[in-house]
Image (cartoon, rainbow, N blue to C red; front, side, top):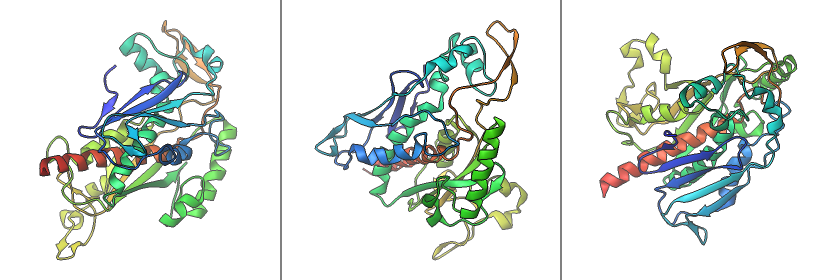
Length: 351
C-alpha cells in the first residue's frame, strides 16, 4: 500500500496495524552523531499513551520503544533508524461483531471499497494506534531541530466547544488536557465526563507553535512549508482542517489589515503565521488544526454491512471520548518531521 512515507531528506515510514504484533517506524536521513537513546523517545510516547485519564481508552499499552538500528554508543550513525513498539494489550474479541459491518465515521467503508479487504480489528492501518509510530519518529526529528534552537509545542485551544480564554504556555504541562487556561481545562474535563456518560464523543482544536525557526525554510511552489505542514497534519486521521496564522480569519480582513509590516527589527505583526510564499519568515509559526469527534461511540447509529444491507450499530470496546489530549504529541511529531525535513533540504543546497 502506497502512502506510508513522508519527507524528502528526512524520511519517515510507519508500519503496523492496531491489533497486529507491533507498530513502528523507519527514519531515514537522520544526520549522524546526534545523541539518541530510548528514554529520549519514551518521554514523547508517555504523553500519548492511553490510560492517563478516565475519559481515555482503557487499552493498557505501555508504548515501550525499542531502537533496533541506526544508533551506536548513544549516537545516530546516519543509517536508517528502526523503531519498534509492540502491541501488548490488543483485545480483538471486542471487534468480532464488526467483521462484516461498517462503522459510521471510520475508514471501514472506504478501505473496503479501495482494497476489497479490511482489518476489522480496531481499524488496522486506519486506527489511531498508528500514530504511536509517528510520535516515536517525531521524537527523532525533535532531536535534529532542537540542536538548531527550534522548538515545537502544541496545546488544546478548544475542546467540546469550550475555548481557552487566555494563553499561558507555562500552564500547558500542568494539566492533563495540555490546556494553557486552567479554568477552561476544568470545564473541559467536566464536559468530557458528561459526554462519556452519554455514550458520545466530542472534537476540538489544537494550536501548534514553532519557535526559533530561521527564515528561508520551504520551497516556493509545490513544497511550500505551509503546504507540507498542512499535508502532514491532515494525514492524521482525526484532522479535518488546518489553518496557518490568521487562517480563515484573513478572508475577513483588508490587505492593509492582513499585511505584516516590516521594520528594521523585524515584522510588526504575524498574521502570516511565520510563513510567506511558502517560506519561513523567522517569526513564530502558528498552526491550528480542527479535530473531529471520535467515531466509535456507544450511541446506536444506522449503517450497512458488506452486502449492502441496512444494519444498526452501537460500538463497544475501549475508546477515547475525544482525541484530545492524546493527539497533542502527534501534532507536535508531524510538525517536527516537516521542519526537520525542510531544514535538511536547505542545508543540502548550501553545501
